Length: 545
Image (cartoon, rainbow, N blue to C red; front, top):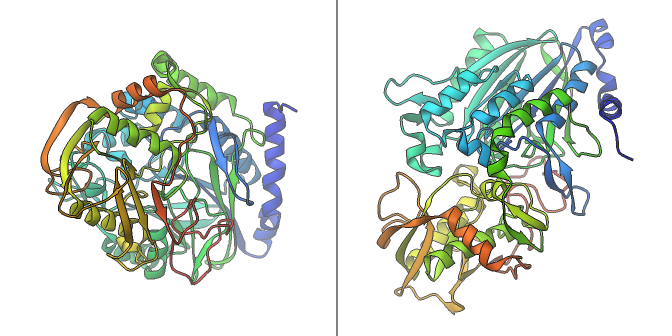
């Protein structure tokens, strides 16, 4: 049955009310308690419209339509009606990057639709610098909600670019909200993106927490961060005085809260396909009850709020003719939901290698881009996969350099020390296969590397193609330093993929097996949550593959 908007809104209210009936406002006022609801999204990546989404909670995979700002608005407004005056709605970053429309407008296309959601506050993510510091600050001025970040400073003055925290009183509860984003931005992103900005580490947080607790006398301290779930867990373990750590960056789906002492850590998925909900009851300035729900914003459960949908349509209308052209076809779904290897990135790395004529192609371990179902591939899909325009860069590397590169990247992804985790998932190779043991000690994970089917030789020189990173040293290629004969080609990554699709469409199923972790299952969708855990992690365990 096809639901009308009114039917969907009514159903949402019934579904969501059931999870918090015990937190009713009347009961709370009678015994001196106060109930509030915190809502948040993270890693929207400029996905303004409904899209395909893969759901796997419950033991089986299912792809269906989800997300879209109109659908987020429906869910949020239903909760606001359920809890009038007691709701705070937040965004945890990576918001203005991730689509063609965002790239072509330096994020402006996101502003009006996001303002229509009536957010209360947000933080910048690691990709918010993609258009430069000036564009980030301009978008922040255009948003109707404030951005906060305790660790971003202007390089010229040393002053913070955004307030480190905000205090909001919601439903009689005084809440201190701290913003904290990824300190690794200058290295993780092409260095030119964040020029003019300084990113401090977690050392800036204890003084802010102390100020909120002792001078401002808040009832609740919330750390809204964009450092990723493993590092967010690390912060919860080392920062006293924080009640809730609301994480973003790693696109993790925590269906159950991760508990560290008295601190809860959660992360709400990505692409606007989910809404995170925390219901809290406080009495005498102490939390006496709290509940977490990761709400799946599926099209068959939530309709699109018409006014917000209209704003999205109006924002995208001038760009439709550029977004819609078909540039290829695929016979199989293309996805990025795997830490080790993905069907989508197999295609992209093949395209880079073919365009450059090298022995090896490497694509970064990006997380962004919703699944692409079998069928036509459009220009908009290409920009979801690669939201920045970069030319191809080629060079020569030794087998020894490749081995060191893979050991370093494996440590960035599988380290048991959250502070050593860095960037996205494993790189995606073409013309190369890698076997590793994720749980092995640092520097001893790589078991075998083959290039063109032959075992790599340490002293032999191989040709490699990847994307140029603006601001890198001339002899640095895909985070590999000191490459020989580096040069930048005229062709960019987008054109390389367009040519590949024109030649090879429809794309067949990929053979896979390019990167194999011998101690992990073929599909690993989290750097933290054990396979089959349903979004749960043992309360006192440390992040593991």
